[in-house]
Image 1 (cartoon, rainbow over the protein chains, first blue to last red):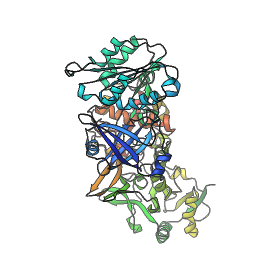
Image 2 (cartoon, chains in turn purple, green):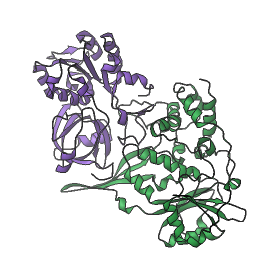
Image 3 (cartoon, chains in turn cyan, red):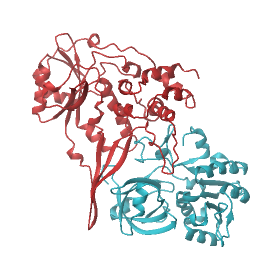
Image 4 (cartoon, chains in turn yellow, orange):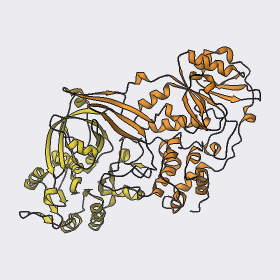
Length: 278
Length: 341
């Protein structure tokens, strides 16, 4: 790479998967082999994805670092850049800068039970660490995934949910908000916090990873507390607006903490130290 | 290097200017246009204004332009080609007539641009600038450099600092760096020895109004304070304070497309704007102006000292002079220091 820290890698859109209305996953491969060789990242990190002429947008790397040779991102069409991304086709070339930010401390979780709780479009930042854990499954004890979306059609990674459902070494609970079910829906019906409470996973030797819309997070934390989870064992990610990704553009900070550098991964104990400005 | 003190006679500054120009360097200096003094490229010495307290804009634009190209791209039938800003094309600039509050500000900007990731676009520009600072012989009620670690004759950040010493227009020249020595060596005859004058008598008097360490300590306890609302009631969110500030570095990154080619640019931004932190979802962590004003003060007087070991304010007073709603940062900082927590 050059000295220019704003220069993206050129990435080719290798494969596009339709996940849900307005939600797509891109599999991206490095245009230059050398970039591919020199690139590495860890679960939890994010990047700046760009369509030349439209601009840059921030989201996580949704694929696992154990899967080499490509990265994936999942985005919902909402703004100028994500609309431009959505118009890309397989073979299109886009930009990517990264990886930035801290990581899920997956090495520290060895020998523990893992409880993943996600809502809606927040499964992608968690999918990275889920697959990372599943690819070294022997390092962990029970793996539980609780995932909910507004409706059945809004669930992302449906093909992977089926795979996780079939696997004997994962307990998967899917749920949709009341009214969001389809006639053949066999999962739960109810909001994520309610379903977590009902499933009552053990907090013994367990870390919980929670990603979702603010309202889901807000109501899930007290449920986890009731189940006996310590704040240090609950992880989440913050997703503030960013431009640079490396602590200069000045907008992602929550008090003294920069989400781009000190985050995006935080424990609930760390979040409680932050001012209420996220 | 050791500071070299020299003396430069009235009239010799113009000669120095001519010699610098003939060395094919670009000179950027303060120039009057109507009632505003701004930094601009100077062709003739007569364009320079020496008699001013403060320019409207700071000198930061020389190292951190208002809009700066990060890269160019062009799309063609083979795909896309992307070329980053050519750092070799950055010009040599002599920045003439900068006040100490701006020369100090450059150090604070550098701290931001080199925190962890080194921004070589900024660093390259900065390394191509020789700074000829000019001490202040006048100040106004907005100036408060002495409350934030500076002073009207501070040499910090200058390669050569000139101080008007005496009423006949002679200057003391303090050569601070190798870069300054290089400039002086272009015209060795002009820099006379015996620069042993006490400059303090020729400097503006800027009384100390508050203690920034105390402000910093107070801020630790004031995040939830109602004073942010009181202080920001007048704030229009126009961002003028950030644009005139010598240390504000917040920026946006945007693409400018022209058909099948275009550029990605970095441009100044402000934490005072309502959309600065707005998420695509509509959620905004700083929904109201008081939160944005708090961010501005906290960033400069609490977060920067904590994270970067520098403060983000040089006491130049520009934000107060520029504010269309007449908010005065000096008054606000004093009231923070005096706040009862």
